[in-house]
Length: 391
Image (tube, rainbow, N blue to C red):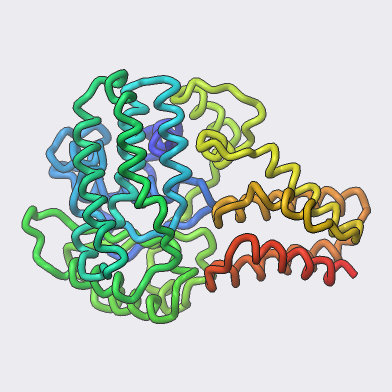
């Protein structure tokens, strides 16, 4: 999807972006910006430009750029614990709806971003639990080659097989980046490249990883390889260690404007929906998540806290039922904060009380991610913590 955002922003934006400048000699980069702003797409376009056999032109047809056109390149590794399932299911929904070649390739690329987390460079970091997943990722990749060769109508008929093949990868929830993974990356980045292409390691979520993993990053940054690039994606770079930040060239991705969002959805997805207020909403809706229920639950949660009226266990079960993943939890808490802000704006709660509750939400959520807390346990604990803060 965010590849189309680059096209919406136009050639002037792309050519004028220092991130995409091939003469930029920095090998350690930070790409930061808000969630769902296209950080991964910017990182992959930067990798394509630097891998190009020619000069990184927009429509280059060299062998490297052809591989990047379907994300079948082998010189990029991604480490992330993002919710791939949400993005892929959304891509499947829209491909089934429109059956266009562009959406067919969009789906294939969405899956291959996931498969880059099972790159051969990370084989040394596998264990008994994940070794079968690496083999499964290989099977999915072969299936994608088959889908790419089909016409859209024929490819749609194979989507059930694709979803079945992806199920084991969806079921495995990676919660953090490990020291073993970083060590494997370090070895791969310093090894000889047989295809004479630069190598890229794209890391997303370091601000939520262990101290050991952060120290492993420092080792990579302190011992850079001439033919390798290290790219960190972050929403809040301030959470990274100062010793890491000081070694990174920083690139900020501007948020998607309302005009850009509308143009992107209407041009590439044939959607003109005033109710879709963000690209995250669009992806969640496409993935089949009940946004109206989530919004209603968030309002009920916030109102209960503000009114200091405890919700019964049965009602609490119903209130939290739609929230079954960390990605949805993040979205849900944003809606709770929005509802609290509305109540504060109406004078129902003071600014001090509102600020205290928002601080409690953010700090609690940060700890939940670090310690991989169960979603329902987190929500129960947060609910009673906010009740105490309200008093």
